[in-house]
Length: 188
Image 1 (tube, one colour):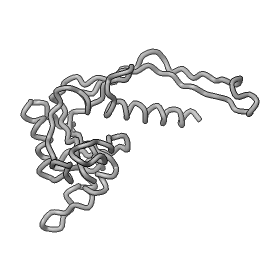
Image 2 (cartoon, helix red, strand yellow):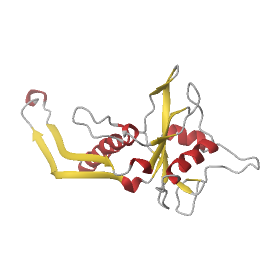
Image 3 (cartoon, helix red, strand yellow):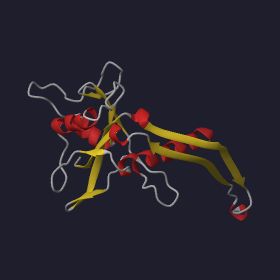
Image 4 (cartoon, helix red, strand yellow):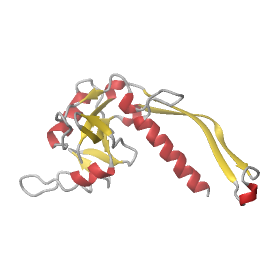
C-alpha cells in the first residue's frame, strides 16, 4: 500500500510541476511560468515537426541555458506519433535507443508523461498537447515537513471502510524561465 501512496504523490508532483496555475495554493508549473520561451504552431495547432523541435532547442540555446542534460517532454500520445516518424532514408527520427537507453531527439533525451497537458485550446481546437524542452535541473521542488499519513477508521465505520489521507507540503519553482521553451498546441 505504501508504494501506491508513493505513486499517487509522484503523479501529483509531476502534474503540478508541468501544469499548475499558481492560484488557490497550487504551485506554478512550467507551462504557466511567465518568461518561458514558446514556438508557435498553426492557427488551430499543428503536428510537431523536427524543425519545431529544433526551434524549441534553439529558444533555450539563445539564452545560454542549453546544457548537456536538457531534454524534451511531452505526452505519451505525442511520443507514440513521433515514434513513427521517419526521415527520407527510412530511419526513425526518434532514436529509440540513444546512448543512455532512452529515446532521443537530435541527441537530447525525450521523456513522456501522461500528465503533460492534453486539453489545450488554440483556434477552434480544444484537444491540443504541450511539448516542452528544457533544463529540468532548473525546476526546483521543495519538500516541507515530513509525509503525514492519517488513518480514519470512524467516518465510514458502518460501511466497514477505513479512510486514509496523505499530506505533504511541497512547492515548485522554475529557477530560470529561459531554461524552458514550449509548444502549447501540438496535435497528436
